[in-house]
Image (cartoon, rainbow, N blue to C red; front, side, top):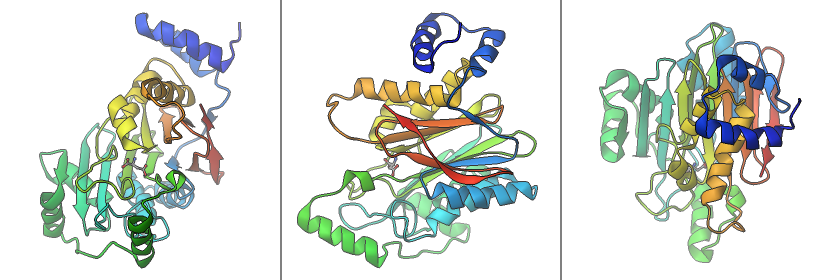
Length: 324
Ligand code: ASP
């Protein structure tokens, strides 16, 4: 009997708590999706409207047969370089003291990971995260150490506080008010290359006017980003504290392993976050996107207004997700 998506998720949660799904059950679940889209390879998906140019840049690399990590870096650079995107890289919202501090992470098809946190004055944290993954025995570098590491690899120090971000920060210092709908816009980009291999990356300036020293979910592997090349990948944007406490991207990938579609897995992870929120009236946002090994992709969010970009051989556009 055909189940509605919501009914299926309800019964699926019961199933997942006790019974491991057989491969054939998982396959039939994967074929019942209403919301998921499916794409040929290569494909890139990326959070928010800045995900449209980012996925285009990444797709162009992938379709030319270039390395998937180069594609991810190139896609994310489009947002990191753009001062009009006030949540990533140059021009990003500063912390409460006016310092722009950046977080980023990357994972490759082999499950290797690299990340940087609380990085100042370096415009492309995603590229530093990749170098941490490729050139060190570590996964994460933070603060001054991360900056020195970047400088030693040829990155240049630059002022990342744009005039517009400085003006907004000064206004905030005076009024102490922030429109929470404009306070979250991490770029997360997931891609599959022409051979079907998956990788992903995330980059952000974090929550606007955060407490100095605050690090969000973006550099935490499993929270804002997780890739398992056998199953799929997921990434997160929104209030990082909620994402960290629920290890959301890892959860999404594990739910896809159980046979849930990307959209369903994201919805389950959002429900998990919602269950833990004490004040249900609070309009916080978390957005999740995911892609599986078959090229099916989708997303889901806590509140209204989340969307993501997609680029493949036939389209480059913005898709809205459902929300709770
Ligand atoms: N997730 C980011 C953080 O909490 C914020 C965002 O998505 O813009 O640092």
